[in-house]
Length: 458
Image 1 (cartoon, one colour):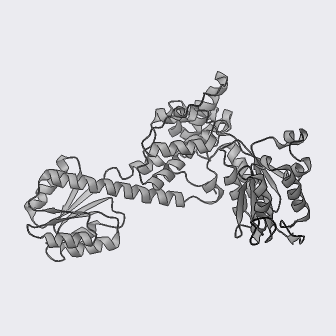
Image 2 (image 1 turned 60 degrees about the horizontal axis):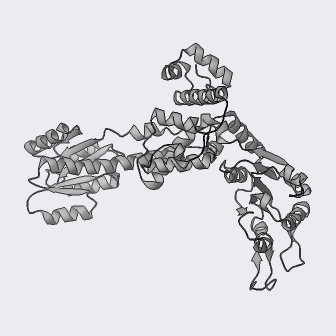
C-alpha cells in the first residue's frame, strides 16, 4: 500500500495563524487585551467565563489561553486544571491581581505557562503571548509530524520514493522477503543497504527473531573469527568464558554482513562451510552447532570482478548471489529527492525540536539538480543541517558537480520536477501543469515520455 507523502510545507504552515483566547470577566480589561493583541496582528477571541472558555477549547486547540484567576462561577485555577487535563501541552497564561503572588506561584506549580500581575502593559502582554504562541506552534507541528510519520505503512514507510527503480525494489523485497534465500545487496555508499536488509528481515517470518548486523570492514582480523563464529572458554589467551558468535545469535533470524568484500579470505572459507552445511563450530570446539540463519550480504564492490581477480572466493560469491538487489544511486532517481528531503526534514524537526521550515522553490530545484555523491545519507545530513538553520546548499560539502551531457542533465531535472508536481497535486495533470506553467497536453506528453504515473487522476 502506498502511503500518503508527508508534506512538510503543509505541516509547517498548518498552524501559522494561532489564536489567543482571552478569559476575563471585566469588560474593560477584556477589551483592552483584545485591542492590544489585534494591533500586533495576533488573532484573538475573548469570553467572560471559564465555562465559555471550555466550550471554545478542545484537545489540540490551535492557540493559547490567557485567563484571569478571579472569574465568576468556576475560577481561573479550576479552568487551568481542566485545560491541563484536556491538553497538557496547552500554554495557559494567568492574570493575577495585585498582591496575589501566592496564587500565581500555585498556578505555575499546576502547569501555568506564565502569569501577568495587574496592572500590566500592553507590551508585556504581547511579548508574553508571543513566547507562548511560539511554544504552542512548535508543539502542534511536532504532534502533526509524529502523526504523519506514524501514518506510513509497510515498505513505503521505510523505502521512500515513487521512482520506477524504488517501486521495483519494493516489489522484489515483497516477493522474496518471506523466503530463506540468501540475498546480495549491491549499491554505492549511502544508498541504504542496511535499510534494505532490515526491510527483508521485517518482510519475513523471521521478524520476531534477531536481525544481527556486522561490518566486515570494521573488525580487526584477529577478532573476526571469534566475533562471527564464537569461542569456547580457554580457546585463546583472554577467553575466560564461552562467547556466542553473531551467526548463532542470529538463529532463526537474519545475519547481515556489510562490506562483505572486506572479509578476510580464511573467514570466507569458514562462512562458505556454514552456508553449505548449516552448522557452525565455535573457536576451540569440535562440536558442530546447527544453525537456521538467513544471510544477507552487502557490498559496494563488483564481487564478480573481485572473484575473477582471485580477490574474493568465487564459490562464496555464487553461494551468496542467489538473489541480487541493485540499489540505484540517488542521482538516477532525482524525482525522489523532494519526497525524501521532506521525510528527513520531518524526522529532523522531531529529533531537534525545531520548526520544519520548507526549502524555497529555488533551493528545491538546486537539490534536484545536485549529483549527490553521498547518496541518501548525504541528503539526510543536509535536511538535518537545514532544520538547524545552517542552510540548504548541497554544494557546501565541496563535491564536484557531476559531468553529465547537457541533454541528459536537462531530462533528469525535468523528470524530477514533473514527478514532484504530480505528487503534490495527487496526479492531477491540470493543477500540476498550472504549477509548472505548461499546458496540460504538453505535460501529458512529457509524463508519457518519462513513464511517470498519475495514479489514475487526470
